[in-house]
Length: 100
Image (cartoon, rainbow, N blue to C red):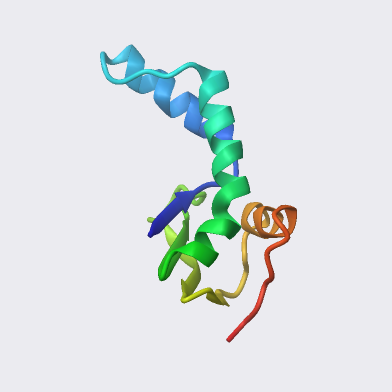
């Protein structure tokens, strides 16, 4: 499973609004926030359930997404400089942070 997230859900809300203004797919801001919150809460479970998970941080504006976590059969490897949003998602769900 590939999981891409960023540090601020409000940037996602803004991106969807811009896309909708251009005639593209739209979604209510509260629905985007709800989905984001549920996704973060489910991340630790996904790491346990899927054979392979790669988590990418897409917060930086000057480059593409950075690989910040890789899990194979629930064995987690964290990159240096784990973003706060990922650390919070793992702690909130009771996930363990390990470097293997």
